[in-house]
Length: 150
Image (cartoon, rainbow, N blue to C red):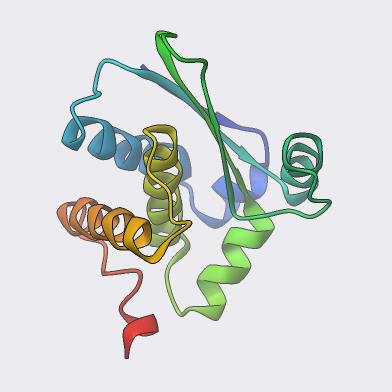
């Protein structure tokens, strides 16, 4: 089960389908990775809430676009992700992307982190980004890294 909690009304004000789009992206990742039976929660929050989570769990006193919190090994749940509205909306505008597509990209990114993927090394980043591209293409979302590679 994928539970989407909209804790910041600006998400739905800017993108009325925000909860549905996040769920669609998460489902696409879980299905592609053979983890469709795993439960996750997605929190669509404001920057202050994500900044507090970032400070408490990562020691970084600032908001970030998406945070992933994997569940303990062996748990039925996969974990939780949280997305910050202000950061996501600003990034989408700066990158010339729709908020809908950026939300789906960051949701997919966060869920891949829950599944153990990372981007600490170039090799890890290549694997994770390739998965993101394939998942997003299936959703009709353009390559989020295309502008970076020009």
